[in-house]
Image (tube, each protein chain N blue to C red):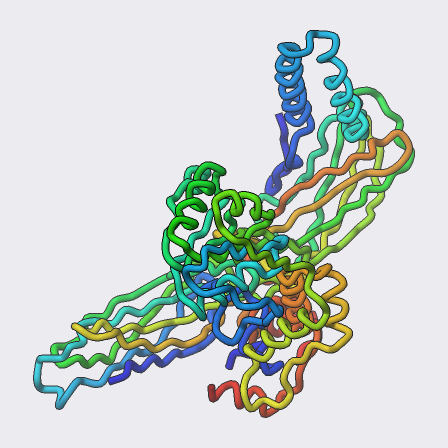
Amino acid sequence: MIADRYHQHGLRANPFAVPQPVPSQPGSFIDRGLPDPPGASSATLVQVIGDKGAGKSTQVFEWQRREPGPYHYVPPRPYRSRWARPPIADLVYADEIDRMPVPLRSRWFRKLAVTGATVVAGTHVNLASVAHRAGLAVVTHRLGPASVATVRAVLEARVLQASIVDVTSSFRLTNADIVDLHARSQGSLRTAEVLAHELVAQRVHAEVMPTSNIALKVAQL
Amino acid sequence: MLSSPPGTVLCKPVGSPRKFLAAFVIITLFVWLFLIAFFGIVLAAIPVLVMVALFVLVSKNSLLAMMRWNQPTLEISSTSYAIGSTPTIVYSRKSKRVVDIVSCSVECLLVCEERVTYTQGTDTTSVARRVYESETVSPGQGTAEGLVAVIELDISANRGSPSFKLRNNEVRWFLTVSASGPLLPRDSHTFPIEVAPVLDVRHRAGLQDT
Amino acid sequence: MTVGLELDDLVCQLGDRFTGRLTRHADADGVLGDSPARSIQLVLRMYTEGRGDTDRRDVTNQNFDLEAHGGLNAAFSLLVPETSPVSYDGTLMRVMYEIEARVDLKFARDEKSAHQVLVIPVGGLGVYDRPHPLPLYPS
């Protein structure tokens, strides 16, 4: 019998392992309180502005999951791939559009304005003036550092998803853990998840669980 | 030509200060030539002098060491080290001029580091964490050519993994070594080592008490 | 019909072999030669979990052609190369192994059966019951 450190703590795996595939899965999204974007064909740019790891992409993916539409991502490299033609539709989702070359973005915004499209986009910089010039209305949401409550909700949801059902002695993050992770991550959800991954790994290594019915239940899964 | 006893190899540190210096000189020359085209020789020299001053300030220790000492070498096993083993290695550094070293110590930090690369949201990020560190301070001895120290390593069987490298996941081991004492340079050097997926005999079944 | 994968041991050190028996019952009464099952591929797979993106590699594999009726009862032996990483529970990553038997079915989704296994360092037999590293306080 192979002993699994995580199973012994009532977990299938480390809750903070990078999910595969990456985009948000139903149930894993934590509402940050942003109002839903206007529907299709509103001639509006809904921009979500925030630093790396603030949760822009997760928010955009969640809106796309609820109201499907074509999605466009501007990769950092190779540079020529930033010139990939973005889609035109009544409702379009995009991410990292601040990387898009200026002439391409201006032309794209003008086309979206002409067709009256709604574009929901994640960006690091405010693109309101460019969108206004193209004839789009602009709705701006800023995702700042996550609060302790948001970090708690995200981390506890991940632990719950990784927990083995019916095992009473399952892993828990304490209040002190969460406050510490929030402080060390400075409100970045991504950093908080990396730190939480290490915390869980260290804890399952450090604590030796007595042989109990937990292992037996796991073996039957 | 480097030579070492049978079963060992002489290992040089990663990152040569000479190459670093050469790269700096080339970049500075390019910047200077670029600035000359706009501002003339005299005005263009000002930012270049600032760059040189900053470089000297930051790399003072390495530059002084480079002038007076050769790069250190580490005499390590020609085969990879086993998990849980406590091998000894020999650190030596030759001086470019006669130096009388009365006493010195050599600090050696053995590190096992995990490094991962992941894509989340739309960014690719690398994260590295030291999962094991073991520091030893060994007495160094002055020789006719410089200094020598014998260092005992403690390669943990309870922390870290044998070295491996996959596309997105890697475990690597390395040593950071520095010497301290009168007349000694205050720089440090990093030497990569390989830890093999072999359990040292002391940890094997039935041998723990021997 | 499911494929049966019996391992002699779930633990194997680098350079050794996972051995066992691979079985599959014949389709229908075992007489008709019209089984949709054509072959079984047995794979020793290494994969990672953790903060890094997954690395996945088929370390060794072995192919078994099935009888016309789809049945099989054969011994297998999968070599674990000495160059592979060992099973590992780290801080940012885990390295895990599984042996998967996949039945190649004509015009249908392949049947699969998989077992988690442990690949340990050379000399680790009788010492490891979980991925490396060794626990500080053995239970």
